[in-house]
Length: 113
Image (tube, rainbow, N blue to C red; front, side, top):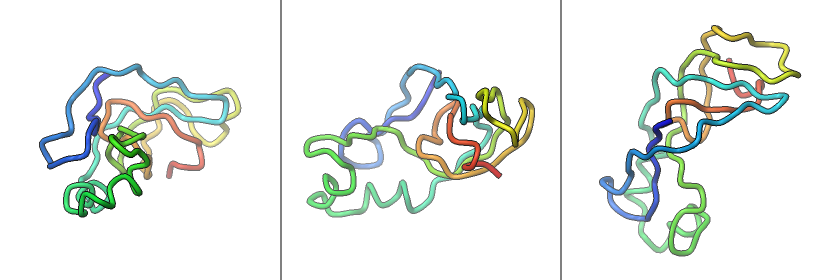
């Protein structure tokens, strides 16, 4: 699947569209096909914050530990784990989940509304 990843600290042209493995939902997780995601302060701050603070918030000294980007999203449930009770494939959902700038996101069923 395709996802936008923030592989290095730097200006707004650093994030890259890359091919990564599609997530699989665990027993209590829901796999969502992302239909829309927004750019907000979570993403914007990475590019406007003084460089000295980036390793503190990014988690890595030379590059971000978590290379995913994107926060809020809306989409459709693609698959559910065995223990999920609230959602079924085809349900439309929205929520906040790191890595929203991707084709698919997997997260706990409590993440979605």
